[in-house]
Image (cartoon, rainbow, N blue to C red; front, side, top):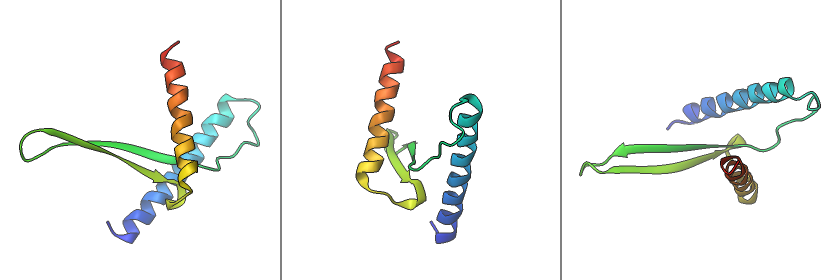
Length: 89
């Protein structure tokens, strides 16, 4: 991956974060002054290897390219908890 490709991808991620913040503000009357401070994009990938077996991986892209691991881990854990609560309803 070239530096230019990575830079364009992070620019697009920042635009997407802004768009989702607009959604949050539109859907919640009390969130006009809320701002996104941390984010991580998590991608699950899958492919078929040379033996015909399914293989996969998970890759994380922290906002702006880097952030303390505990910030990323906190976002992931909070999302996990939220999903588990939603699944149990």
